[in-house]
Image (tube, rainbow, N blue to C red; front, side, top):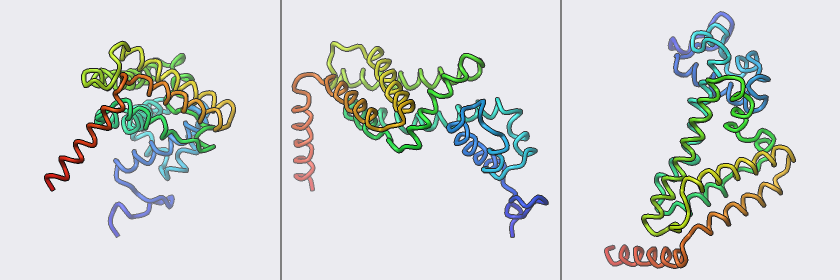
Length: 230
């Protein structure tokens, strides 16, 4: 048995520092997403992560530091994977945005919990500057990713020239978060599905006239070229 697999005196498995930290962050995110930061129980986090209190304080000075790390490491990663990366890689930003919106989960448990970023911002931004600054940064990064993608789409002729990317990005975030907040309050997926459909329809309206036909024609040309080279 290796050293990392040996058992501690209290029966818990020893872990390497990186794994210990990751386990704590995963458990802390789950507990804070369910109960809020102030309602989150450190005992529950420790029990679910299998980490001792001493090990926790080795990585995080206090519960506040743990909450900050949840935003920096866990929620930021969720946002990058759901929004930033697909938008950066997208050929057509409208298609990408609609796909992201439509991919939103309507599982009852997730509806009951709401958006982790918005939850943390609403609860803690008025109370703690560290939380406010971190959540504001993630919202700004989200807004920038949408605006940048739309601007790139305008230059490619895929987005209407008469729209302001920054304003549209702000509206999309506000509408998206609003629908999630309503779903959290009503505890039902019906309204969220309708809202996401409406938001997707709005995004579709940002295409210039004929862009859909041009996109399909371009796609057919690329497939034809590919077949001729095969």
